[in-house]
Image 1 (cartoon, one colour):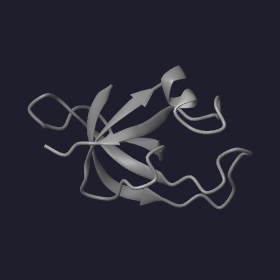
Image 2 (cartoon, helix red, strand yellow):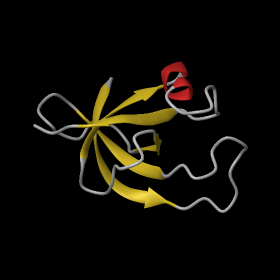
Image 3 (cartoon, one colour):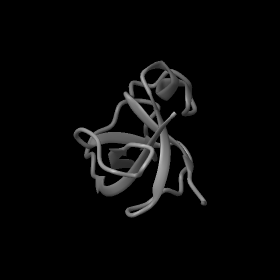
Length: 85
């Protein structure tokens, strides 16, 4: 799992089958000291409640495709949790 901060939202006018109703968010990857690392990524919100400004953890690749229902939808990153503390 990777740590990141949600910095914005993405609006998709057309989505592939299985992604209807899923929010897409811009996530800035962070290191263990919560400093920005690399370029922002677009992640599907698998927890259905993440929003701008929140500290989240996300997964990439095959794990991202399995984080949503139905499984194996075409996403590269998916938010799987919100960090409380």
